[in-house]
Length: 422
Ligand code: ADP
Ligand code: CA
Ligand code: CA
Ligand code: CA
Ligand code: CA
Image 1 (cartoon, rainbow, N blue to C red):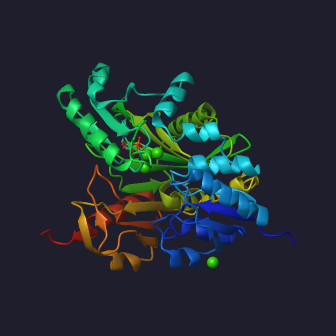
Image 2: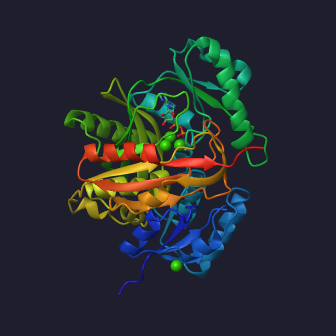
């Protein structure tokens, strides 16, 4: 028998079960590099994890790579995959060091920087809103040339942190200052200098939001599923619902696919699993918001794809990062239904007392996963100053209408209660 392949999974929180379960299904052993804020006991016990390898990637990337080289010398591993946004460049560097499948280092830099993504899309002739890069908040007026409304956001942010819509020219200075402050407070360089901090101001793309999950193996791209997020109009962009498969006409789905495949080419992405967010301008024209070189939502996008298209996305992602051909390259998958994801909104923020309604939800046969990421006592800040989601509910349904109705039900019944402020 062939030895089971071993893959280094970097920085995926062990509270998110999807990749860990997929590794079991795919027969892959995981060496988990735990995130600093992960719970050690839970990480040790996660399915398929045979080893924990703590590395200080953010504080000391060179030391972390040296430790990984040392580990490889003891016993080689067969793949490496990023479990969160920040470690993507490190994982690309390690993949090169060991000759493993993955993004090249230049591509890893491209997909970590919204400015560069915009520039690449522009050069490739793909859809791009008007945009201006602000490197100093004093230069906010540079963006007055844009068509309003606009969206102001960190150049290398995540989770809609610090993303704010500005409706008119009068509010721009204040909005840029607000986003800038949030960038300085939370996204600065490790030494706190935030020396290459920048914000991006973009024309507002008016239309519903969608997401596309894709696999790419040796340059060949497959868009596995398109999910529907619906209208998110701001001024802050806390995402709360997703449904798959998105109920869209074939020609719009084809246009989405073309745009996403074009973006892989434009960014130089030839190996990996990608999470791409787009807006359908006017309900019809797909324009990229951004692409992330990882499974979306801590892996919860796997559920939408698995149910909605039959592709075992998380298992395929592991294969692609082991340099293996995805199974869906040779076997046509069979969809099993409609999937929904509900992210419990933060609401007002504060110190969490409890989340109302979760027990009822756990008992519902349509619900496949309830993951609570903020237990009693954790502190959540309201948007745009995001600091984590309270909980996520993943379910399956017989139709898109039923999925939508269930999401409405969750919105009415789930609520975070915060401790009274003194
Ligand atoms: P992040 O890395 O923080 O997720 P995004 O660029 O994806 O940054 O922006 C977060 C959200 O803000 C998007 O999901 C979208 O709802 C909204 N948004 C960002 N840019 C635009 C834009 N140009 N037009 C409309 N909405 C936008
Ligand atoms: Ca284990
Ligand atoms: Ca991102
Ligand atoms: Ca995003
Ligand atoms: Ca997102």
